[in-house]
Image (tube, rainbow, N blue to C red; front, top):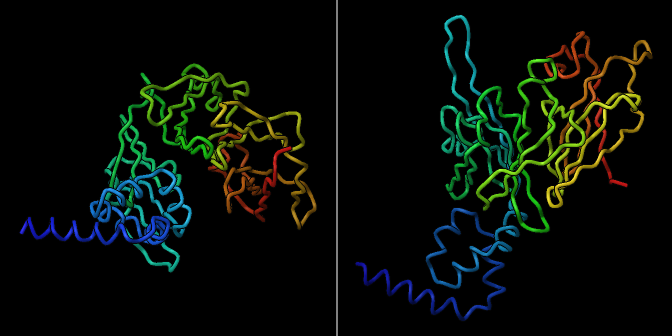
Length: 312
């Protein structure tokens, strides 16, 4: 039985060598990831081709995008019934799949995705998983980071020029947190996959409204910060993942008015990514709450979306 399998593999390898490599690559690029995992054992040539980083990125670029619907775990009072977190993939045909859930643990909290990789926050570690291959990587959090640590303090991005993946952690200072500055970060910490340590980087713009969204576009991370020098009181911070440098992007005057009264309402701002562009979402709100708590405010009115076309 074993000899028949070896003979079949040798025969497949012999015939495979008659096909030009560029034709083989073009065929393999059209196959799903789970099929490629099995085809790596056909021959050494195919294994090397499929494992090549350039092939992996080209395959990811051609793959159809799937929507990930993630529902965090919740506790329902008064019985304190715990409903575990759930995740579902929705493909281009709007078919549902619970494939992502098989890679989640009961205490997992989803916080980022990039190039098909999913990042989960756990009590003591961070988990990066590839649902297509089933492979996972567990990483330790920065030293002594346990108290007042939350999933939204982490983000994950890719550097197209170098092919590096980097985790970013917004280091919360306990004293500032207790004094009413929960989103004041003097330092961010960066972990490059393949390294064995977190590195501290001084943040020249300490106010980081990361609870309002952090997005990764074209090798840079973006988040909102308070800026008293603008009409809206907000600005965007860009962090270049390759050079690890910061840039402030001033927001233009945003014409946001209440159609009923023509008055300028109180506005909540959120950061998002749409079609590969950095976007600011504006929504009127009615509750009298600090800016850092507006994600829980009573939102009411017309939503506005503003896209960053380019940095000048």
